[in-house]
Amino acid sequence: MTARQVRTRTLITADDCRHDADDIDPTAPGYGAHLPFHSILQRCGLAWRAYLETLPGFDDGVIVPHLSADFLAEVHVGPIEIAVSLVRVGSSSFTLRCDVEQDGATAARVTVVLVKFDYERRHSVPLTADQHAVLGADLPAGGES
Image: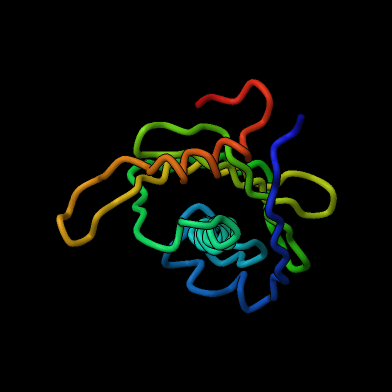
C-alpha cells in the first residue's frame, strides 16, 4: 500500500524567480533564473496546509520545530507540483514529506515535523485518538507510528 498524497500545482513566473533573489539567496547573485530557496519552502508550507485541510480534526494549532530540505535541481519558470505525504506519526507530532516536482523530476524534497500545539497554554499537546486514527489511515505500509 502506498501513502495517500495531496498534490498541489502552481505556476512559477519570472517575477517569482527575481523576487529579492540577490538579498535572500547569496549563492546566486544577479542570476534570478531560479526560484529562491525560501520561496520553495513557502510553497511547501502552503502545500502541507492544503494536506491538513483534507484531514478532519486538524483545524487548530500546529507548529514547526524541525524542517530539512534537499534541493536537487533549480526550480525555474513553469508549473511545479508538490506532493505531500505522511511518513511518521508520534504522540504529539507527525512528519510530512513534500516532493517538489518540475519537468518530471524531483527538484526538492522537504521533510517537516509538525507538532500539535496549544496556543493558549503555549506548549505541545498529544494528538487525540481521533487524530491518530486519521493519520494512521494515511501512513504507508511499513510507515512509523
